[in-house]
Length: 136
Image 1 (cartoon, one colour):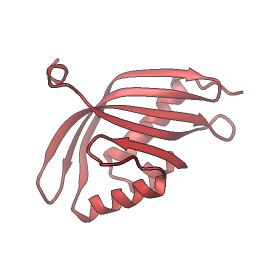
Image 2 (cartoon, rainbow, N blue to C red; image 1 turned 180 degrees about the vertical axis):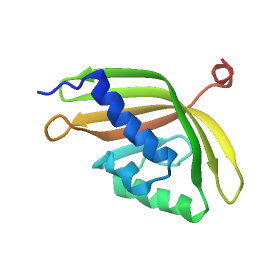
Image 3 (cartoon, rainbow, N blue to C red; image 1 turned 135 degrees about the vertical axis):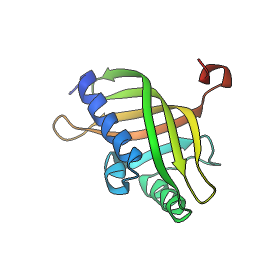
Image 4 (cartoon, one colour; image 1 turned 135 degrees about the horizontal axis):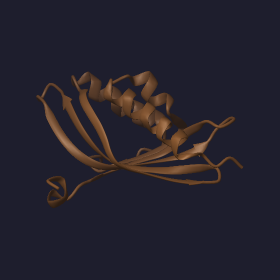
């Protein structure tokens, strides 16, 4: 069974982050399996599929939402046979009809091995960062 290298995991994660930063819907969702699940702290419920998240994303775009900047730091890769867990801190700036906003979150992306030595994300989890940690 394929165990991804740190470089392969970072490449897959960087592709997702770059597509998110560009608000590139097609490229962003291409990084996720159809059965991926998503847990976002501002949302009331878990999203149980990529289609559910795509619907939420589309509603954000309708509201004028777009990413203006996104930086990944404090990155950790934990590989295992058949996949990997990637965690990082993400600083995001957006613009919307409500005006600009910026926030810092912790994010976990779980990858599984796909065809050959490819990786596809099967779970994404965002959590808040305690205020005392944000300033550090």
